[in-house]
Length: 226
Ligand SMILES: C[S@@+](CC[C@H](N)C(=O)[O-])C[C@H]1O[C@@H](n2cnc3c(N)ncnc32)[C@H](O)[C@@H]1O
Image 1 (spheres, protein in one colour):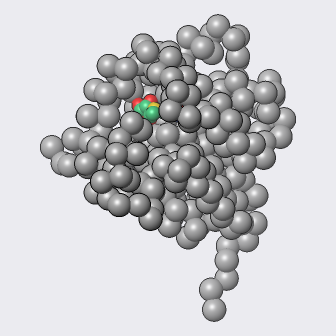
Image 2 (spheres, rainbow, N blue to C red; image 1 turned 135 degrees about the vertical axis):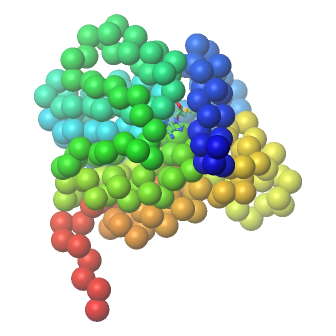
Image 3 (spheres, rainbow, N blue to C red; image 1 turned 90 degrees about the vertical axis):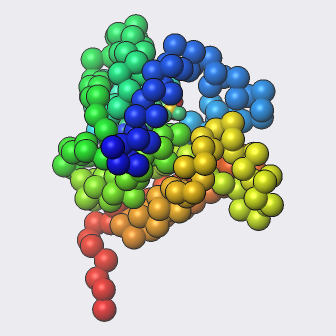
């Protein structure tokens, strides 16, 4: 099995094990001072959604962002949630059923193999993309599918810069910080892929530099290289 497949298997096993308590754990991050709800609101606001828009969420998990996206796109909009872990998607399905949303499709798929629908208005990933070994390729594939003017937004974890290595690692451990993840430095690949394919790219550090919010726009015309 390749190193990437091993990472994927480990991720699936982790989230199968934590799906039942995921939403509760997410709330407990407040005790560490992580303002999850505010960060999620910022991420969804950065998508600049309008009623009727189509949105793909990569690594949607239990669907914690769906209420915010639903509120922005309304019943005429469409949400496609993609996740590789069956147990997380099962929770998302319960949420969708309970809220009576009819415009949400959930797809169990590896983000690296997912084919984005052409002309999608917005793509979101929160706390998920950095877990995908092929994260840069996923950003690039999403950019190619976005409608002109469409938005790609990533809220995720990174190793805080400008601190001693031991402190940076200790700060990030509660989030995603396995040794494999730290060595891979996926946040750099995500930022680079966004800068290479999008305009108006803005990267904001959050929570002592352990998190980032990155957003960009698919240009109306491809940049002309001279
Ligand atoms: C920390 S949870 C985040 C869930 C949700 N986005 C949120 O903000 O609450 C990470 C999610 O990413 C999913 N994931 C990890 N690797 C993936 C991959 N290669 N393809 C699709 N989903 C993946 C996991 O199954 C898990 O549901």
